[in-house]
Length: 228
Image (cartoon, rainbow, N blue to C red):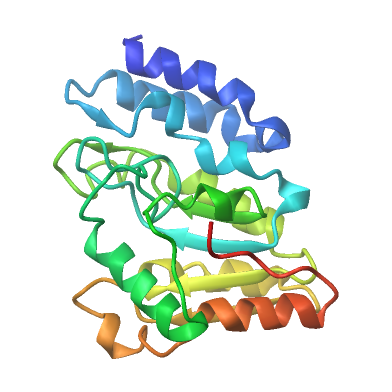
């Protein structure tokens, strides 16, 4: 087993109750085999791959934001969907558009691209593929990570007062799984993806941040502090 796969296996032992998912049997072993056989540089660092799961345990999830795969640029991704290391400048254009919408929606936005302060408040920033080859977006889309996403979505779908934020068709493809167990007092907020190619087709003006907090507050939960 190569060093990345070994580090990934070790990191997976520190994800708390997520470890109970069936994925962490043979499906994870298959992902590890694929990674072990990939001679390319893989992102993010192995210690960051499960950052979303380490940051918020199942019973603490209040908002789910689904992404696609990690940034393929070295030094950018930190294991949280849409998030980058706080030293990254300029921030990726999709994240820049997220902050633009946040400014229009609630009048302010973070001063850097690290979204870990969302995660510590119960926002699950989950990519459907957790690794990528350096410089090759989507390159690990078929090695088996989606089985984990499906299990997580299914596990959370029957939770009450959960806010699902689905940006773009890739995230919205999970709606059937969500709707199969959608609990009372949970809501799906969906719009176009914040990518420069689609943000003006419905992402801008969708007000996901204020709408999420209004919903949480309405159902007796504290709002998310979107600003660090």
